[in-house]
Image (tube, rainbow, N blue to C red; front, side):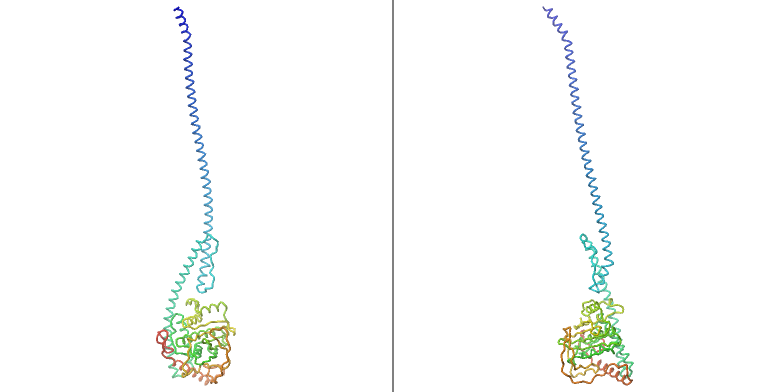
Length: 472
């Protein structure tokens, strides 16, 4: 029994051995398979990680590519913007060059001309559209600075010229007055008409020097006492080269109407300048008609010539000079200087009388010198009037009011006829030596009487000197 059991056990052992080996082998195979599966899983996981890394790298590369494309697009946009800015800058540069050329060749010369002729238009910038405000402001600033510099230099130059002219005029005037005094002494002892001719030319030169003194801002150099207006007109006539053509008509209601001492010599200088212009710019065979009028607000001296007349712009310029509106510069009076209206305007502004010019009914120019009532007075009835001064006429004559542009007529009461004064100028035609000598003697006597009538009187710059005596 035991043997059987042992035998069964032995048989079972023999049978179980291969089974156990097979089982161990199967277990080993299973473990190997599991290991391979685990390795496969690890490899899959590694592959998945690598795939994920590759995907990440791909996305990063895509992002970088997108960023690079964006940068390229931005760079292209910036390049287009830079090109547009360069085009605008080139256009602005070209516009600035054109504006600078326009400023140098057109605007600056016009602005310089407008300093002497205010009505001259000064052109503006070429481009008036928006976007150039800074350029326009800079150009206007440059134009203003240039004009300011021109004005300063012009004032400095003119001041220097006036100072030099004042000194020269003062010395020349002193010499001419000495010549006048010497001629007066010689005329008292020598009866020679040539001395009067020499004295006359000396007076012409003295009038020129007086005009220069007025232009330079100096006192004319002589003062008078209260002087009858008719005598002043004759005195102004005697200072003009073409005196023989001047015809003076006296329409005063009061023959002793006179100009106050403070304005007598300036009025005489202004009248001489007006008569000088009238004779210079009219034919030597035509008359210059002078009418002395007395209005309700003063007196007027109307001068008509039959000359070439003046253009509207010339009349306008003359009106500005006479009104004192235009600046008078010595350097702008021309060569030779055209100073007549400038001198009259300066005297009008300084002494309170007025003057205007307009076309004359005779075809030339009419100048009207207006003397307000505060510059007029009456001379002493006991003082004799000059024999050379024209007597008031008795017929109905036009009377001008200082404030009116047109004359009004007023009938005057008849006056007692007076003997006509001898003509201060001998007639060239039909004259004889005796008549010429008589006329020259009358002119000489009247000249000496007029000069000796002047006396010391207060003037605008201190004690006045007799006529013909220079004041400091």
